[in-house]
Length: 78
Image (cartoon, rainbow, N blue to C red):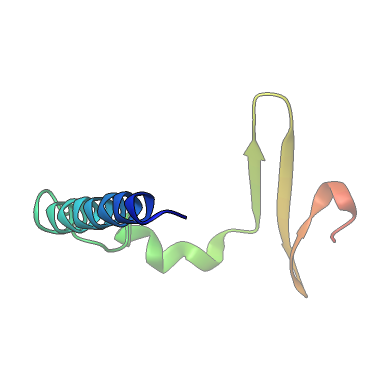
């Protein structure tokens, strides 16, 4: 690689890293939301769930809790 190309590539890399650092800091300081539990009132009832159905536009899957843990109903509990 020629020296001119290496200098250009190095300069572009520095600009990209500086832009990423500025964006990272802006994201951390402006409009940052507090992280935490979305529905804290449901925390006491988390073990009451025995079955969960996830439905997409063309298919669905059912998770069911058994003695050994969670399994897919459509796959025989696997």
